[in-house]
Length: 313
Ligand SMILES: Nc1ncnc2c1ncn2[C@@H]1O[C@H](COP(=O)(O)OP(=O)(O)OP(=O)(O)O)[C@@H](O)[C@H]1O
Ligand SMILES: [Mg+2]
Image: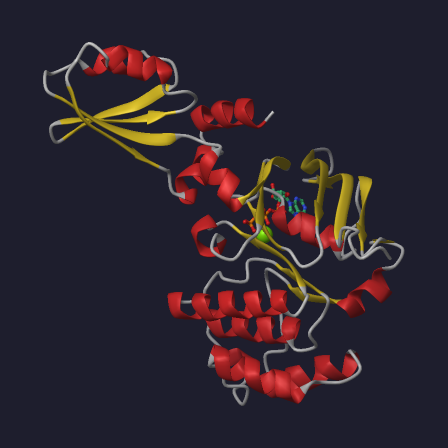
């Protein structure tokens, strides 16, 4: 395989579920994207967007209605047995044998995979502060998640596919998780992880894909995403100006009064705003990038949706 070929590629991947006997729901609509070798790719979307569906399709746990996925250049359906050996997978819901201890689960899964790298397990459990001697039933939600991360990572697979790995982890553990991902990347592993909290993964992802209603709305580098969107502008003018005068301008919305001036949301060019305020004495203009959380949320609202889609196309 060409070393620059994508690790994951989907082509028009589509999945329709039966809601009941008569009704269907299309959870994924013509999804096409690729993940490059050595990349940390964040797959982001709100509840029900289709993240888990995509991951199940990649792992051949469910079958597509149309389209296909390839991993390492191999068809995800036809080569799933071989591919599973090369992928570390963390499911969104980890159903483990409740009566076994963490160590027993690690051994059992390790044996199925042809061996356990005990050094790797030790290092992961130490860093994640996970006690493997306890029974699964006594694990908290966060501890189950940590065990899932150990299971996915312990054999140092070429590709990690992680469904909401950070959900349930406290901020300190999220930090440890981020470090583990960056180290995995340094060792040449590729990471595909889903989340609905952009803020949780923005520091480690090279690119993020934003999914909503089964459609990929954007695939961007984290830095592009920050720049390609809107800005918050705070204006301080010496004479009072009616807010309505600002809110009708092209690209301006969400005008609110802040102490001694106005804060507004600006998308597109500055020119209409600058022309409008030119007759006034401008004391101060401050421009702030939105947080990625705000950008992310702008994909959900109708307002943000139209603006963003216009800008992406
Ligand atoms: N087995 C199923 N049968 C019917 N509908 C399903 C099934 N699995 C998922 N769905 C529907 O498909 C859509 C996508 O679900 P999916 O679980 O992929 O979303 P998600 O992005 O992982 O959400 P979350 O953030 O809540 O985990 C949802 O509308 C969901 O109700
Ligand atoms: Mg999910």
